[in-house]
Length: 124
Image 1 (tube, rainbow, N blue to C red):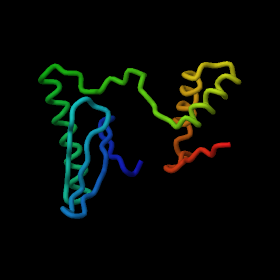
Image 2 (image 1 turned 90 degrees about the vertical axis):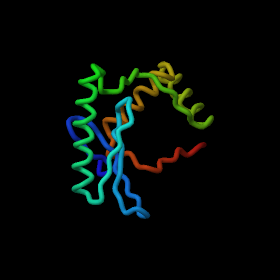
Image 3 (image 1 turned 90 degrees about the horizontal axis):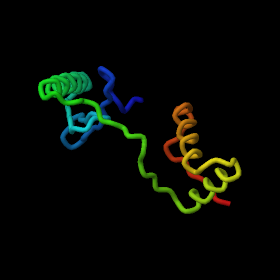
Image 4 (image 1 turned 30 degrees about the vertical axis):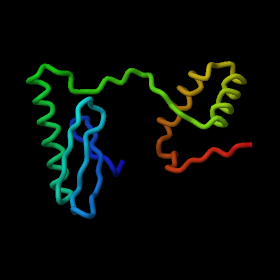
């Protein structure tokens, strides 16, 4: 996870703007928008940690839950061919398409290091 910073269980994205020569990012997994930046890696890390501390303190003062609630449901858009192939496999396994997708995501999470950025599914 080299493109993420972590602090107190929170994750922050890492980006670089070559025009402004600044590192910047935002906190992932919360309902609010929390940004941070720095002109060096050290400054970026310090800014990220300070942003998390400020965010948690603000949430405490407001009596607000700081973390985003992940409901466990989301929409996924795939090609018609991938949808068809997944439905066929699910049917062959005598499970619902939803259960097939849950198992596939669970497998991917357990094997995250094996996932490549540009996976393409060949159609037959």
